[in-house]
Structure formats: structure tokens, C-alpha cells
Length: 378
Ligand code: DP6
Image (cartoon, rainbow, N blue to C red; front, side, top):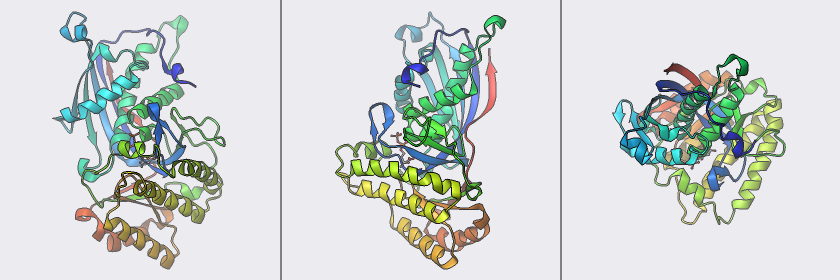
């Protein structure tokens, strides 16, 4: 597939108004995406666990513009955004940029007025990035509209958009909104970025990891410890850009390829010790890249390090397979196999909660991607 394969043929149908609701989860990378080229093309392949309960639910309502109105004459994107029922004009620039990036692939965008109503299952101020779940949910809603416009329901030429194409294009569009969002459409493991050893992997969209996965990884748990719920000092987008001209960039990109290759047999044979080494090293390397950028920055907080040390001590003492990973922030994702759920929950409550802001943490686990909640169209 190339970008051009996502440019649609003239639409068969006309749709006046309606609305679609999709729910889409967040994801947590095991091998990290950090560094990108033009048009949101990643510098290296990444792989993530799709999450289950941390999700965004988005309703896209649409009304075809009247050709005679001023809106059509100025031919601007026309939309309003609401978070938890409240109008959010500060979200508009990000969506405007997204619309500009995807309009070649969704030529109907300027023909409608959209109302985008969104809500997250996790608190907005939790420091959990909502861009992956948010952009993937919005991409799915837009794809639902494109499907309606495209599906020819004339008996002689009944062509329905395939589920595979729907998800692939939704992932392609989500990537243009926020890179990691393209890994949220499906589960339970998704690869994004071309890797020679993974057939079908692409820089353009995420693909479900199709190799064998050992039962040790089924229903893997992720408890997110909210260490710092504030706004990050450096956004991911700025951080990615600092990989241009970074002294260790090329070695880092090579390492990501190697780590993903090493992960394939580990996921197959269920070797949790080897899994831990790759995952924790990836998290620390991500933050090492931030600390060695110019300008340099640190997103971890003292409590992030306290938690990491506690996890290491617990693992040693209890012979546990618990480990951690980090996103571009101070929060800690605690990963562990399902069979350790009871003991690890106790450990978290007794020893780690003290390092969380207001004692807050979120229990999540591996999930299976986006799902459609409602359809309404005329
Ligand atoms: C550290 O996907 O948020 O979470 O493409 O600029 O929107 P943009 O960045 P984003 O970067 C996420 C980086 C990461 C690692 C990962 O999820 O792979």
C-alpha cells in the first residue's frame, strides 16, 4: 500500500446528515517510537500493547453544508469540539492541522459542518496522553462517514468497503493526527513502522502483530501510576523533533529495530525475563534520548525513580515478573502477568501508591482496539 491507495474514487452516495460514535483505547509502547520524518513517518518501528479501559469515546455529528451559504463560499473547515459537554476552542488548532493533513484522503471534509463530542474514561488531567485514543476515535468516525459515501448499494455493483481497508485507512489517518494513535485501532499487539522481519509492517499505518504469542502475555496487566498529573513541560512533538541532529539518533533507531527483532522469539516462548530486559531498557533509553537532546530535558520526577527502585527491589525479593515502562512523562506503567495480579495489587497499594499524586492510579490491561457504538445517518 502507498499513500495514493488511500485517495478515494468519486463517492457513489450522498449523505446529508447523521452521527457516528466510536470508542478507541490508548496504547502503551514496548519498543518506543521517538523520532519522525516528514508527514509523521516514524524513524523506527515500534510495537505496543493496546489497552482496554483507558479510552476516548467520540461522537461525530455531521450536516452537509448548503451550497449557497457563506460557509461553502469561504470553503473553510467547519467544526466545533466539545470535551465532556463543554466547548473546547483550544482543541481546534490540533484538529484543524489534522483536517489539513488528511483532506487529500477525505475529500468530503470541507462539505460538512461537524460537531465533535468527546469524552475520556480517564481523567483529563491525569497526565495520560489522550491523543492516541482521541485521534484514533475521530479517525474511525470519519471512516464511518466515508464508508457511507462509498458503499454502492446498487445490486449490480454491490461493493462494500472491507473491514480490513476500514481499519487500515483509519490507522493511516490516525497516524497523521498523532503517530502513536495508529497503534490503537486493533489489539492486542500492534506494530507500526517497517521492519524487515515483520511482513506487512508499514510506516504508513499500524498492523496487528500476527506471530505466535505465548499465553504468558494473555490478559497482561498495566497499572498506571499517576506521578504527575500536570501539563508536560516538553510535548512529544517537540521531543520527536529534537531527534533531528541528535548525537545518538542513528544508534537509537538501529537499536529499536534490534529490540523488535529480539522481541519476536520472546513473545513466542513467553520468556518473561527477556521481555523485562527489552521493555525496561526501551523505557530508559527513551528518557536517555530526552536527557541527551539539545536542549536537554527530564520528564521523570523523583517519585518516578522511587517507584522504579521499589519495583526492582520487589522483583528481586519476590521473584516476580513485574516490570515498568514509561511514556513521554513522569507516570509509570507497571506491567505484570495476570497470574500475579493479586500480589502485585497488594504491593502497589502498600508500597507504590504513596508516590502517586493524590494516591491516584488506574488499573488497565491488554485490550482489542476500537469499536463502533452508534450509527445514525440520513
Ligand atoms: C513516548 O504519538 O504522542 O509515547 O506523533 O508527535 O503526536 P506525535 O507523538 P506521539 O508520541 C508518542 C511517543 C511515546 C512512545 C510511543 O508511544 O511509541
